[in-house]
Image (cartoon, rainbow, N blue to C red; front, top):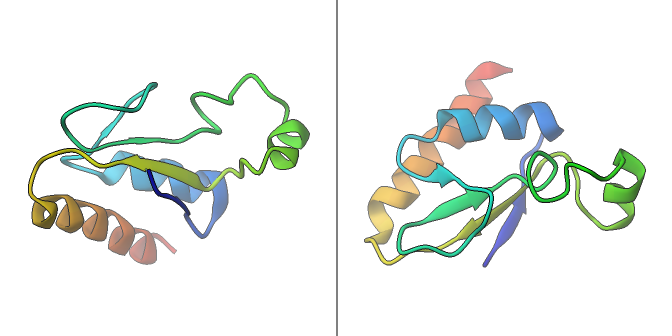
Length: 89
């Protein structure tokens, strides 16, 4: 399960999540389809920002759980969402 940081922090991570078309945001990972989690807004939302920082959970952190579908459409979805962040600057 890879994790990656979205440059621009929580605001940019929220935009990224909103712009995905195929990959779903879920509160709990592990499904047959590819899903993502935004820990600052889901699993770790009850922690203070200081507690999240100590745990290594930044506002821009995204966790990806790979599903069984072909990689190409998943990568296209992630790429278009990331590309749209550049246009939002």
